[in-house]
Image (cartoon, rainbow, N blue to C red; front, side, top):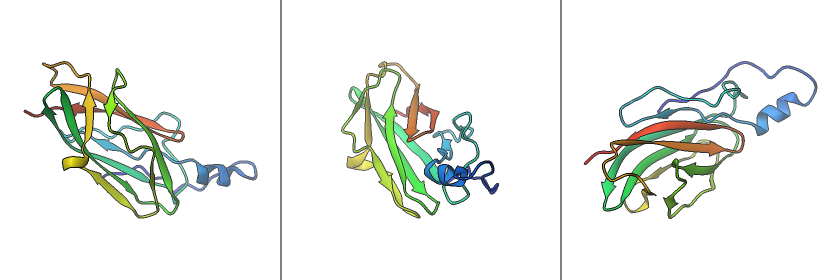
Length: 146
């Protein structure tokens, strides 16, 4: 699982380190085809104790929906809140978000708990998926298998 993480200390006026602790960067998203990591512009750094890794394990068509299997992991020292997951048309069924991950905790959505994405064209081979946190977001291309 990949993550984006900074060892640079926060600098600037007093309190900037506290702001950095409250902020975090969506670490990385690897597509099912092991695509490149993506980060929200302006949030490439962050406090060294805060990391979030997101791994897309796969996506499979199920009737009129796509089941997406995703693993989230918090490799930092502070809790992380994942607040949004959407496709271009915004249709996601059966959400359990926002998801709160404590330090060192990981969660996997698969099988009966897979994220069900609706509204994807019947002949689509892929679609973009956005994941957002309190102050960061990233997009991955989900490749649909048969």
